Length: 69
Image (cartoon, rainbow, N blue to C red; front, side):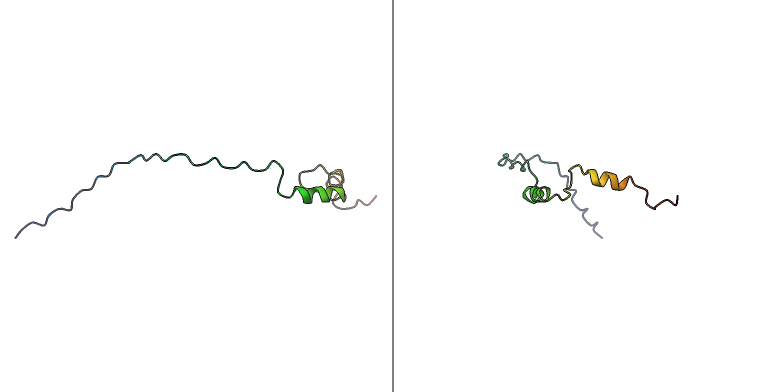
């Protein structure tokens, strides 16, 4: 009886492929997307994320429950 043929061994080598660089990516805008909305909120006296808020500082430093004196 004939012996079966062994499966061929495939050896692959890594191949480096260099692609030309694409166009440069556009830089993100300096101002946040919501800058117009933030300006509107500031003009109306509203809280804006990332802007110092003295009222918030005072509120979070108060006791959570009133004291019974």
